[in-house]
Length: 155
Image 1 (cartoon, rainbow, N blue to C red):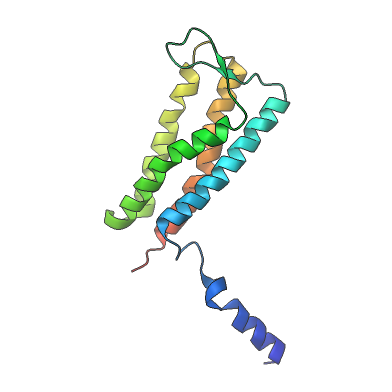
Image 2: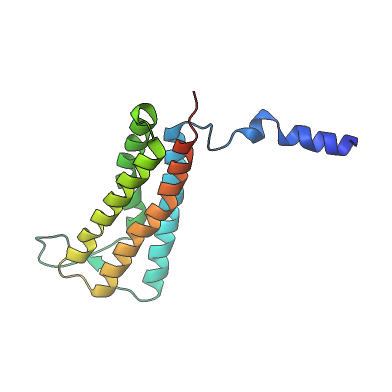
């Protein structure tokens, strides 16, 4: 083995480079996944806004739609992902199969979250679709990252 190959192999196995998502604390992977999900979802919202989708929605019981501010998509992801991180940490500690349980619960919750945009009064159909898709986008980023970490138990 040449010196260069040996140095490359040694560098590739150093503690700083071998620390993967599988060894990081679940909460940290959750925070990083949430930040990634928030950024991706906000970019999705900004692209839709630039494409001309009206960013106004109303909550049930409201008389008229209100503007969804720039940063609103990311803020929603950050707010709701806290529950997902708490769930992941609890499952990592007490569940027999934490990754599978996490995926099942979060996919069901994501599906249930689609009711909100569908039921939003005084909201254009295009905005309802964008809101629903944004829920799926956030879930598609966050759930797999946390599930992958939960599948790698550290004793």
